[in-house]
Length: 340
Image 1 (cartoon, helix red, strand yellow):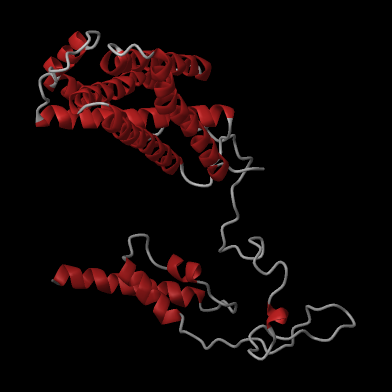
Image 2: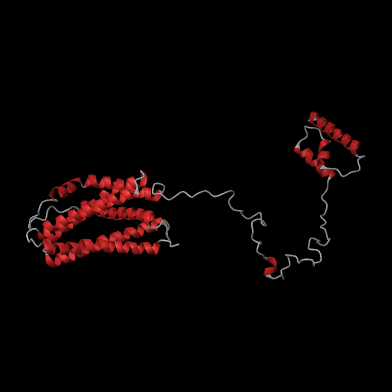
C-alpha cells in the first residue's frame, strides 16, 4: 500500500508541475494539449480526470442571425418547420430525389448486365419435380414390372370376348394413376418449352403457374376423352370390351408420358435443341396414335369388318379431341402471354 501511495503522489506532483509550466499560455486549451501533460503510461481514468479538471460543459448558443441564403432582391423564404405552409411549398419535383436525400438508396452503381435467361436446369422447383418423377417412376416400374410385361405381351393379340385379362391390384392402379399424372406434367413442360421458344418468352403470371395451367389442360383433355370413350362404347359395345379398352387406354397414356421423360431430361440438362424435341414429340404422338388405332380395331371392329365406321369412330374420338386441345392451348397462350 505504501508503494502505491508513493507512486500516485509522484504522478500527481508531476502533473501539477506540468500544469504550472503551461499556465502562462493565453490561448484556449485543447484536449490534446491537456493529455500531453500526462505521462505516457497514464490510465484512461487518469486521462478522464484530467479532461474534467480543465474542461466544463458550456451552454450552446445558437445563432440568431437571419438566413441570408436566398436570391438577391427576393424576400426571405419560409421555414419548412412552419406547419401552416401548404403541401406544394414543402414538396417539389426533386423533393424525393436520392441526390437531395443521402439516407435514400441511390440505385445501382455502374451499368446493369444482361439478365441470365430462364432455364429449367437453373430452376430448383422444376428440377426437384423432375427428380421426383424419376425416383417415383423407377419405384413404380419396379413394383409393377409383371403388370407392364403382361400388358406388352398381350397388346398385339386379339382378345377373346370372354377374356378380360387379370385384373389390376390396387397398388398397380395407384402407380398407373401416377403415370397418368406424370404424362400430363411432362407434356405440359414440353409445351411450355415450345411456347417460350416459338410464341412468347414473357407471361402475365409466373412460369410455375403457366406449367400448372398447361398440366390442368392436358389432364382435362385425357379425362374428357376417357369419358367420351366410355359413353360411346357403353352405347355400341358390351361391358367386357369396354374393360379391355379401358386397360389398354390407361396403359397407352402412361407409356406415352414415360416415352416423353428422356426427351425432357435431354432438353432440360443436356442442351437438346427445341426443333429436335418437337420432332421427337411428334414421332411419339404419331406412334401412340397408331398403336391406339390398332388396339381399337382389334378390340371393337376386328370381327365386324366395318372399316369406314371404324375410321369415323377413330377420327371423332382421337383426331378431333387432339385438334380441340391444340385450340385450347393456343387460346390459353393468348390470355397468358404479354403482347407488346
